Picture 1 (cartoon, protein in one colour):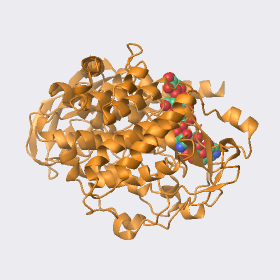
Picture 2 (cartoon, rainbow, N blue to C red):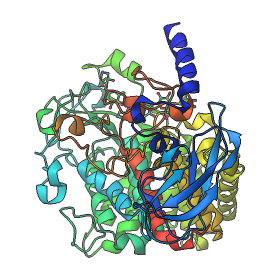
Picture 3 (cartoon, protein in one colour):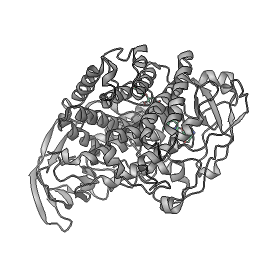
Picture 4 (cartoon, helix red, strand yellow):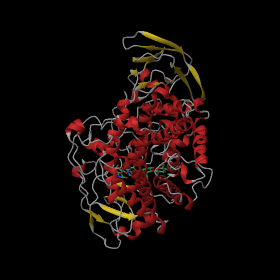
Length: 588
Ligand code: G3I
Ligand code: 9MR
């Protein structure tokens, strides 16, 4: 009842809010002019959304107020989710590099932004470097981490086997060593299911753009060792994932966590006992997929990493065998906590439907081993659906793998390759249909249902789908739509925030991220993508609006809209880096 009253009053509030916002009251231009706060490529589209209710003109100006371009605002074809039309400033035809502001007559002036080549390079690099900041079991040294250097947290070399995880040779309380890995998110726990899609997405960035990714230098401890830094960073998590497999039976623990979430303290202060918890089919299959992919990717680095690709292949095969004999072991916290102690209340990543995990794992094994038996065993195309990838929905990850490696498997006789490619392209066609009619000219704006917990990863994963379609067809139109979603994340959205810490003029300062909260440093750790607008309000922190695309608050308690997570940063890293790599192919 209370929530409903709150909802109605917040809706009313947001209706009258076109002219005011506490968050931006100092300058209405900065609040009402919604743009990619980082900037634009010289020859790419340059679209800015203006929140006003009347027609008017705009000008592009240098910081010293010299007008370099003039235009007329155009009304959006569709209203936004609050029912209001937006006005569009399009200055794509202006291509001269420099620093600029956009002025809208009667409204004010935007933040300063750049037009330049490589305009997203820094934020793209930071989106990968962010994973270094998420490393468990190592100190972050000042020469790599700057002012965010910190002591080692979570050595994880004495982890307890939880009662839910006992097996032959590993009774309850057995100590296992499971160091390294990335912290999942704002919490300090490590979850195989979420590591699966996150690691895959970074490895896919390498598989799709190897030459570009070889040029990306991140200043991490391994830099300069002959392996691209993206892969170096990914190895930190892969080596942890390998320890999560029970070497006797091949099954993989669902997660390595405390019994309960830590306090808001630095990693080295968080010393509660850690457990490996219950093997699950989803974790074991996600592990299979990532290890099969790793075996393929790291085969090229045999000299630097002797035996690593073989270890990954063996681990993948053993995990796959376990999943054949345990095809439906589901992680369910209620069942687990009814039967075992201590009770485990950390993140679930529970997924009751594992058919998609079988498809993904089989696809990776098929491509790596060039052995058709894996995809013949299961129904790879069970229906017409093309669900957007997320931690719980991984089917299409397998399709991407088959499509991007179609030459590698050409000789296997597999009949579905053309069909899989066709589906990816028609899925992308569905995404872009009418996207330019939306109030913010972006695929992300087509459906209210996109605004869920981690909505920014929806925008980024849509971007990946569009880039896959570009790679399959060579049609540059898909890149423009992918760039729209990048613009969305970097500020052309209903909140006016660039959602990446440290990149843009108005960025999250209070993410739900324990080190950023506890380190006493004003600036949060850079390069982290906040979850984004989510009217679900599962954390019950008051939101400024329940309109789907406005439902965001920069509050460190707001884990449903302002947490950070590896499975959100990784598709963002893919999107930002892929567009950097492809920038010369984007034109307005
Ligand atoms: O998919 C449904 C959608 O169909 C429905 O319309 C919508 C309406 O509520 O809900 C959608 O599901 C939501 C799902 O997130 C979307 O991904 C669930 O309600 C929501 O509970 C679920 O939240 C998950 C959350 O954990 C709670 O379990 C997030 O996906 C997941 O990213 C998040 O992960 C946490 C870890 O548990 C712990 N570490 C931090 C991490 C990030 O917050
Ligand atoms: O910090 C936790 C975050 O990582 C999770 O996404 C979130 C939902 O599971 O839970 C957070 O922890 C909160 C817990 O659920 C309830 N008590 C307060 C904790 C910190 O805000």
